[in-house]
Length: 266
Image (cartoon, rainbow, N blue to C red):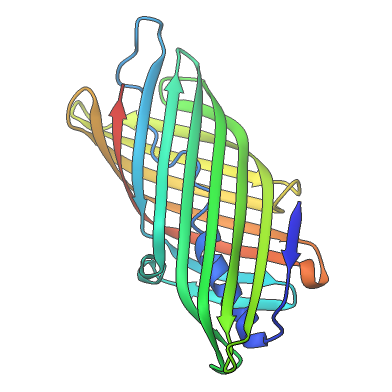
């Protein structure tokens, strides 16, 4: 499941790569952030929603590759400064009781890198794709059970040029699957267009991560019968470690911050 290829021996350089890695891995794992009751259903009783959203995460924890561990404390500005491209979107389909949610996050980070006290300079690149598929079952008008799987695929590398123009580099890749279960609560606020959503989820259980914790809350405002805006907050905590020696990969990280999304019913 894990794969690694190491060709750089600088401690400082390895720590820098771990720091960049955690920036993206913390953005992963977006599970059903801002869900609200389906506003309109087709004649078959099935409703469809699409959501595009933005995140403003703060990351803190520890990330490690091989023998290198790095303490991390990154603001949302640090993340956005090094973002090259990204896609964050979700689909939700729901019938009378059963439903499905698919959440996809893609991130591509590029940043200047250096190692060995500045003797080497180059570029750091990291890509991460996270896909979450969940089934839902409605217990009541306000409560649903959720169960599914979260898949993370992280790959990246560093290319450096030394004082004699000799190339050096390091590449890595890691992927894992976490089962996830949880409960979702959603209710309208008064008789107007506002609604409130909250969700609590746990996952991992030693299958991929030792433990994954996801807590979300949001307010939604519906403009009309086909669009709404969601404004909320998310807390995500990963406890993952795999391999040993040069192939060791660690991600013990919490990610928390505001999120804004635009939802369309179709």
